[in-house]
Image (cartoon, rainbow, N blue to C red; front, side, top):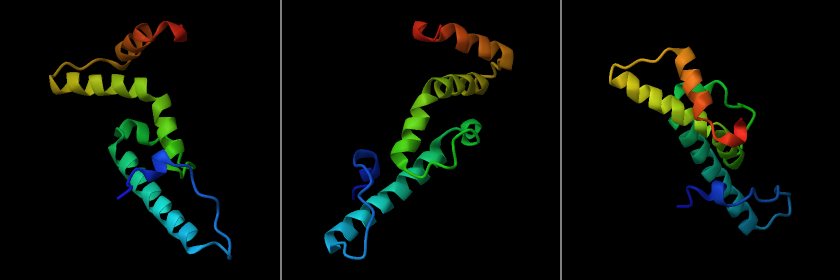
Length: 108
């Protein structure tokens, strides 16, 4: 079904009037995959990060790269959510402190 085609393959060259039917078919497959990937990723990222993700990004590969930049913060947010479910809420200041002290040395 090539659902992740847009993550594996770069965008095909833009179509022109004289594009072959194979090129048109490849472009349609890639665009469909890109739309599905974008919808899936946007739906599954935590709500707290939906507002900071760039709305200008329309290609799944770029969106995925943008998410990877925030992966560490997202992991910490998930940890906070799990603690909240256990009725152990952390203040925002304490959460920021834990994030900062747990950063890898390359960020210090």
